[in-house]
Image 1 (cartoon, one colour):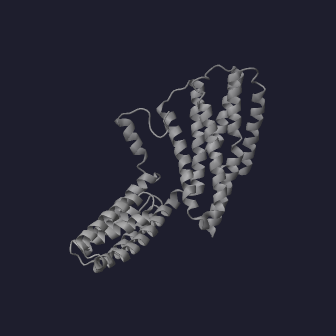
Image 2: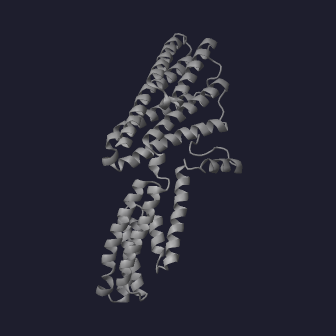
Image 3: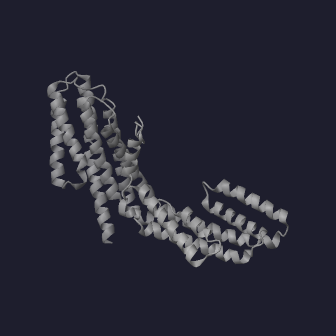
Length: 361
């Protein structure tokens, strides 16, 4: 089964997918709105001040404005460094290569190297495209020396627009805090488990509600991974919380793996277990799903009481297995899931404590 997309086609499902992204909880929607404002701002500046070659501002802002702050900051640094070095070299080309043929070869080489480095070394690609632009403008009869300062100024303006956009327009740290994404990842696993239990009771089927729950669980896990990746880019700022975050990510992936493994049996195990086992199993499993959904908000004493009750019920459930293989599989998978409750709870609340300390500082 595909996880990233809906299995059934049709405009209704396409619209449902698009509509689910039309809110500021969606990183895609936030970036789309942010880019629209960046383009409007850059175009307004160019038109109001009648800037010659003002499209350099627009291109810079578009290319360096990335979906998250860390990536944008890295792009800005690379863009400015590449532009400054490119301006230094490009401004000297007309003086040391007066012939048209040599300039054409430089344009060809710089363009080729720009495309070569474009995907994996942005500072190099910026350097070569700057050399190419200034050399081409020299061939067109423009005053390259005056354009070098404009190129640098336009780069700085475009970079400033992008930096302000990612810093103040729905910044990621307002939505992708470690505490928030971790709680969401664990809670979505609880919803996913609940849908799988419903299918174990009624027979497996890939209905829309199940696919949405599965998709959201995997998207929440991906958001947690993305958040930690962004935090890793600034170890001085987030170094104290990274280890807890990666431990929680590992636990979250183990949890979603155990839940998915339980879901793999939903089309094979329906009503084959003994009634007494089934009744106790589903009661314990639904209680586990409730705990996962509310894990981040549970006080320690409430969590410990509920966890102890689940453990006792699992022990009683083990005595009801007998020789039934289906019952043994269900009990084993539920046991693996419940083992992740305490590590998840501990990591969630340690992450919250770290977030509160950071906010207080």
